[in-house]
Image 1 (cartoon, rainbow, N blue to C red):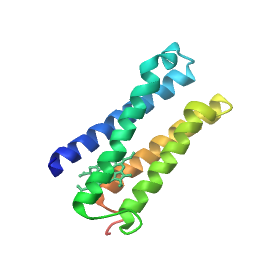
Image 2 (cartoon, rainbow, N blue to C red):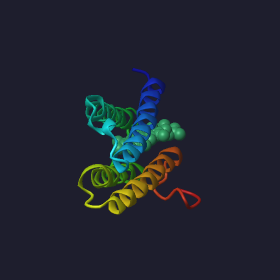
Image 3 (tube, protein in one colour):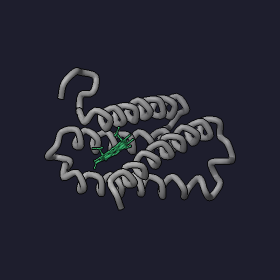
Image 4 (tube, helix red, strand yellow):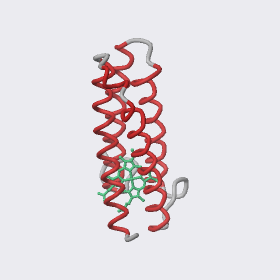
Length: 129
Ligand code: HEM
């Protein structure tokens, strides 16, 4: 698969993952029955798996790796944080306030990952690399 196609798949999965996370947060906070639909339990996992597989394939194709190149280390750390906050927001948060807070912070972390990706820089808020 060409690099551009792989990157297109990766970015499409990132957008879809964010959209599904955003919607599931709203449905969960509103106790919507949509959360109990079968596809809602399956599709996000498929998308997130593809996101990760395409991430690994991209890293291999540009020969840059987490724990070697700081921007990719930052992306992996961000992804782990995003997953953890997602679990609190959608499953383990004890109150709606906690779940709402985790949902909002997870979105900030997601935005950070996108900025890191766009600039190849683990500190995208600062100039330079
Ligand atoms: C929620 C998780 C992730 C999101 C939202 C995300 C988002 C993105 C976006 C938007 C781009 C395109 C950047 C651009 O060209 O402007 C990108 C590229 C890329 N991502 Fe991710 N990514 C995620 C996870 C990861 C992880 C964990 C890795 C580490 C293995 C990774 C490796 C890469 C690589 C190697 C590229 C190609 C950079 C290039 O064009 O040179 N991504 N990612």
